[in-house]
Length: 261
Image (tube, rainbow, N blue to C red):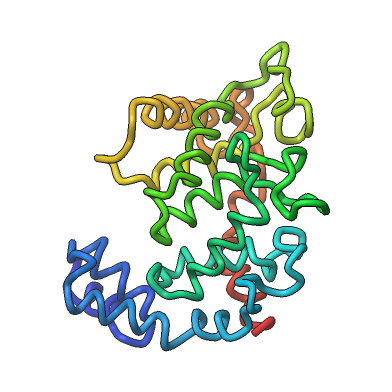
């Protein structure tokens, strides 16, 4: 990459871009003083501190129980953007947000993440667990320092056990996990579920991926290769999801959050 491009990327006017350029392009470690300074700047300047200023005392944003349903402003979406912006995992406000998601979105038995919570216990309902949300939360929580947490490991196990990568099979799997939503678990695997599951497993450092992680990643990668990334596997001339060719996240999320803040 040309030196002038690198110099542009590490300018201090956008601390998140600077952080990623230093670590991903220049290979600097997280304990490098320059990298630490960049991460500190993320928490002091720009959209991240504006978002954190609106955080509720319980670690949530907006209406706590609408952590998923308030798209782009609820806690799920806010945590997602904070992870993508490289917010500091050691910041107590970030930890509070993660703990809120664990407490109210994660289903404790299998480890998947739910879009709704139990009115009785406040924990994630098993009937609301969906693959795209689970993938997004696993990825975000890994980026925010929770890879070694047993709850994240359990959620990773949910992905490797339940996430499908089949393609218009004659008979879809049956069982409590698969019988809930046709759009997620019908005869054809949901594109978004595959994308988010792959995103989650890719967030695990290569040296930390177990055999099950690697096998599932290979299945998910093969799924997208079979679909030419965004086309129908059985008719490559047809785009499977036209919206995939339009830039959305994180630009759309940031636009909404800036208006919200």
